[in-house]
Image (cartoon, rainbow over all chains, first blue to last red; front, side):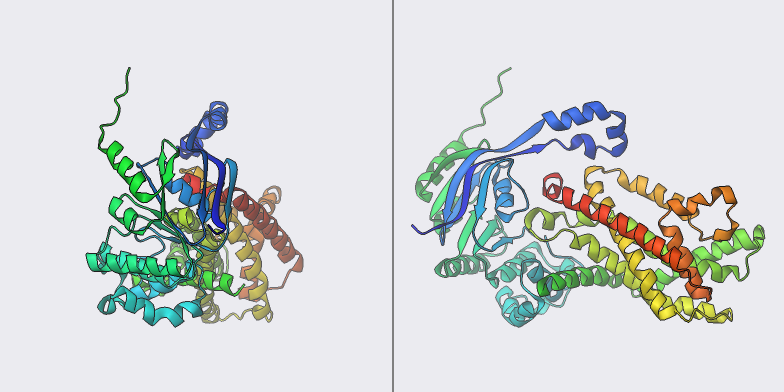
Length: 255
Length: 251
């Protein structure tokens, strides 16, 4: 296959426990020695020795339980986190599809939010203005576009968010389980748009809990379990096994 | 560069729109607040305690407006990073633009209130200095740097120390009374004069008042204020840069 767009090379990421300081300056200062020691020694390992490559133009799914480390992977790709160990190589412009409402403000109208979000996602204001009509048309929110966002339903917000992203020109697109909201016809539209992105050679990284969506759009799937890579492979194989283990009860802690 | 400008523009526009959409009287309120304080201090210090300062309300107003700009910038910047947590966790863009848009927002409010200050100056039959247009720029720049520098520091530290907001509000109150707002700098006893040098806001407030009341220009004082502000800005900026890649971890 073609060149890799994203490379994770033995990446580990651990977070210090910030609770000691976030509990407050007062407490931090009064227990300074132990706080400092704790800050240095104790940490939470979100990813351990993760290696994988995402090829240019492919749609790459990530599945795993809550807290397995999926969001940390997306954060590392987006460049908002730095790995503790290992290397993350990203080639191209990354556009994350923000979770519901992020980058939006509920007091601003739909139109104003399109500008805000579009610029945050890397377009200039002029580019956003040029694409405005097309974005509004894609969102199908004609009647509501000049209403403040607080009057929108969550499905409508998701439509607006995806419509902005659909008009970006990314090399790498990060999608973090947003397709679940919005009605069926809009979901279909989103999947179609993702297909279109793919035709254009955009690399998509897709985090979802829906086995259906994963099977529909992904070329390969990575299964993250216990903060490390459990399996990478064809969607059908991986999702079958994933569905199987998910059905099992959680192992009980033996004391 | 063009993109950078657009980013600042939309973030600031957001701040301003949000502020004015909640009430039509947004501008009115930002002027009422310092005027109410002026009235309060006037009653307490002039009417009840009989301080000997000429045109005391005007004396207060010329210092309270610039003070409010500074103190609002600092106290509202405390929460800007938290308010934009979802952006910081997902998008990689220069984080220092978030507090910047907050400070620009308050700076615009200050600039819009300058005409109000001038109206009071003329009501009291005074006239501002001949160097007013130039002076506005010369005193604006250091105060902007100072406000932005402190905003950078407190907004980033507040993510790590979640009780910092209380400390900052105490600090702002103390600093207010260490700054010659309700009293004149010449009223300080000789052995307390050093307070003025500990306080980066003191030279700026003195300059604002001299500017609006048409008193003489003191280049040394302004230079001192500028260097002070620049130092604090650089310190705040480098602290912010050091902490900024941990923001997504702690939010």
